[in-house]
Amino acid sequence: MENGKNDNKKTFWIVNISNRNVTLSDLNVSIPAGRSVDLLSKNYYLTEGQLNKSVESGSIFKKRDKIVKRLVAPGEVKKPTLDIDREAVLLKPGKSIYEIKQDKYDELEVTDEELASQNADLKD
Image 1 (cartoon, rainbow, N blue to C red):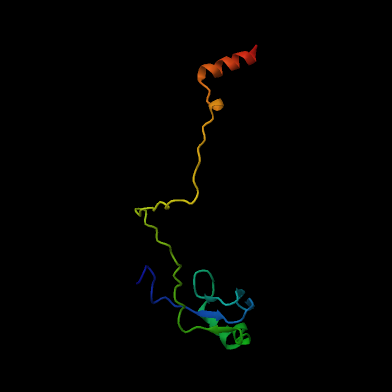
Image 2: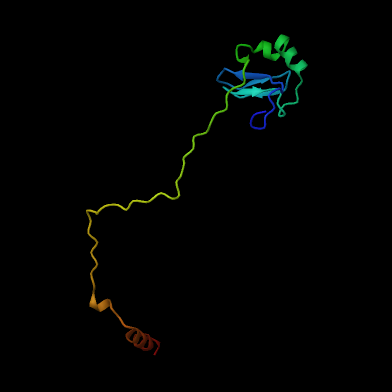
């Protein structure tokens, strides 16, 4: 057993080599284009007898130009990951070509007393 999978479990892998979805009418299964499917997995309620009969004279036989039986299960596709180092130091940018100018205007500097008196004048 590797990664919790049972190695001696029977499988029946088929692959759709066409660019269209293929329906296997005698098995009541539709195989998406370019996909590999294990027909003995728990997602399908099929027996080995049904599958062998389909290979011999059923829809797998009739569509053998589109459906091929795999001898080996497809490998697992490892999804690409992006590792993040939360302890990494963030670099600050160097000097900017722009200079931030902070102008002070005396008329905009108002004290609390002046503001209170102006508000009192407005209420009257």
